[in-house]
Image (cartoon, rainbow over all chains, first blue to last red; front, side, top):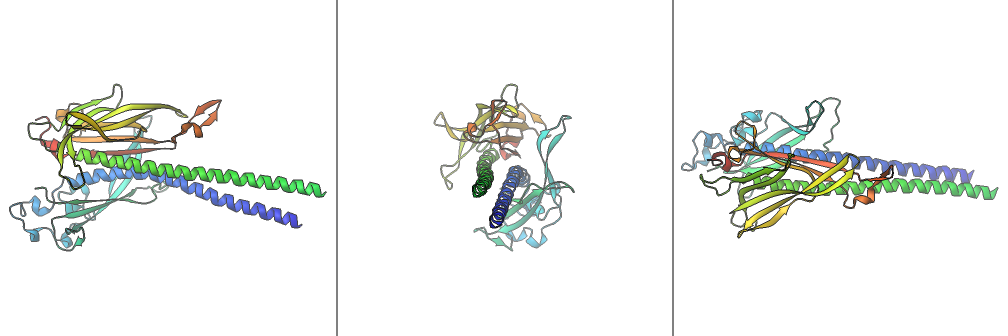
Length: 177
Length: 218
């Protein structure tokens, strides 16, 4: 009887060990899928940041209120007046990217037999703030704006989310003159 | 009877040990795969950063009479890049003075591996800088790129082949993640060796360098 109980105990311990190890294997495979999506997300994020880098530093530099000859810092758009909910395609100045309407970016991976592109869709959001010379956030306008882009996998109902964590990218911009 | 009990006990013990070893082996392999994939991700993103930095500064120091992109060709019967030369930027140190330098990307065949999906050709990207009249290798990729292509795009977002019409640059690559010693994880099927690739890392980006918008082709 004792021997039988010991045998059962041994088998039970082995089952628990096997279960925990298999859980670790599943987590590794999920992480592998997430890493693939992370690399794609970096590419998508880079494209969005490239688009923003083409825009003017500020509405006031765009309309000529603030120029290289008229370096009036106080005329730049104050942080509390940054627009929100804009669509990224309508952004003509860096501050328009602040809390933009979530923009979707499609990353193609391959094509199916019919020639349609297959890939993953990501959704981006952004946060813009002024920073001082030391890189610390500033409540007053400065000559440097820091844009932080966040990207995550866009998932329809019933789809599986592979990207385990969102990816971020920061870049600072100054007037282009 | 006692002997029979002992034999049964030994069999059960052996079975449990075998189960434990099998599960542990699989878990160890998964941990190794995870580490290798993380390293491949880091390597791919470092390569991506280098490319993004280079292409964002295409045309650095050029004047209205100079083309930012000077050479562009693809491999025969392929979308893969062959050679891409442009005026770029170089710094000898992170705080050093930036200098204009001619940069060349070349993609060369590195190896062919037979996998469960069939033969796969792998390439290696080499980045060179023209210093003192001599091309010197400065950076590049591992010999694990399944594809690497650079497309030139004009102002109407159409892919072009004439470098004079280029206004944007799109780069795409697929980095295959595989074990260094392929034979060690071969799966024997029908008596043949079939190496297994773990993952493919896809990356692409479209860059609009400031200096090619006005000067290229002028």
